[in-house]
Amino acid sequence: MNTDDDRNTAVATLAGGCFWCTEAVFAELAGVKRVVSGYTGGSTPNPTYEQICQGNTGHAEGVEVHFDPREVSYRELLEVFFATHDPTTVDRQGHDVGTQYRSAVFVHDPQQREEAERVIAEFEAEGLFGSPIVTELADAGPFYPAEPYHQRFYANNPNYGYCRAVIDPKLASLRRRYSERLRTPASEA
Image 1 (spheres, rainbow, N blue to C red):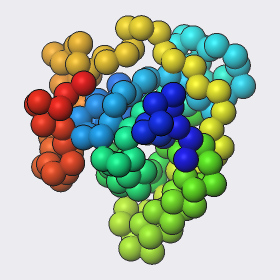
Image 2: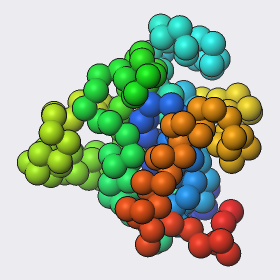
Image 3: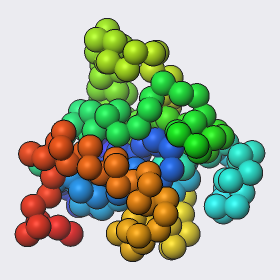
Image 4: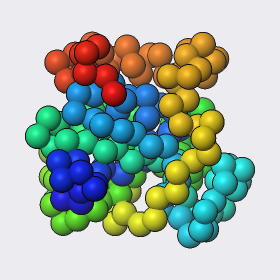
């Protein structure tokens, strides 16, 4: 498993639509040390938000989740990822439409690929989503952190309209469904 400078921290790269939503979800999980919003899966070096929004760089809005696998497993991250976005729509999450909003798992090593394939196969066999999972599974490539105003967007702007309308319901669902996996107030980074 790909690890950070800290021997006990691994990295997962996930794209589940708007990175504001995905970052807010993973920031609440115990064992997650840091979440970085950014751009991945495309061909333009050092893209800007404006370029991404045009939809022609090939990048997805994604997050790098830096986590301690002794506290939260990669599989658990994938379970939360699939539960908190729609993996059955191509290039779309709600009203957000375009290749930059695609569902994707960018794997860092063969173990992550095997686990992602296993989770997707299990969810498909269970018919969990009622439609086929279209989540892209690809090797992780360059990840470009988004502009500073996108980092911790929900934490810094909880009353912003998009946050209240889209992110608040996702977090409420996360808190109901995965309460045992959430940070305790004393463990917040």
